[in-house]
Image 1 (cartoon, one colour):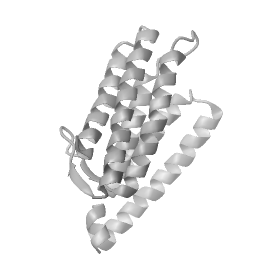
Image 2 (cartoon, helix red, strand yellow):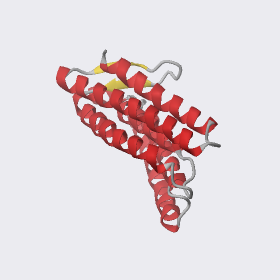
Image 3 (cartoon, helix red, strand yellow):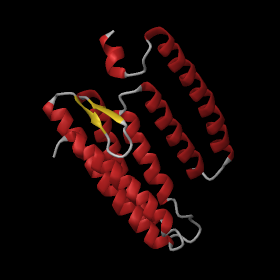
Image 4 (tube, rainbow, N blue to C red):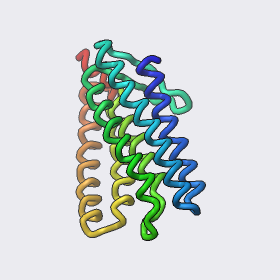
Length: 187
């Protein structure tokens, strides 16, 4: 399989696992299994895409089906894909057992949405898309912390960072007329 098809499959697995884990959240153990297995398969696809891109040493561009999300996979972001895939694999496997504890809330939706957004942020070929995916990651992370005092502080600091990224996108757009990373690289 190509790195592009592996990325698409990985994000699809994360999305399907997120939706199914949410639908079955009334049964925590089942929701945990769905989230964990789907997340593990998505993580393996992500790591496989990174390994394929790193060993082939070529840049691959394409469009993610259903979303129109422009992708660019390079050997540099392949390292990040491998890292996300391996970490996501262990988090997903741990998440299966985590849902057996009585005080834990079902979090399969948030974990898998965070992973899908992280993968999409890494392979985004547009600066604006990358900022939106980073914001989705931040929102998922805040809800995963359970609304703690530290989580609220982190959320506020994250919004400041998002504001600065939005200003940076506006400045780049004003200067170059595009947010496409491929076109910016050529200039």
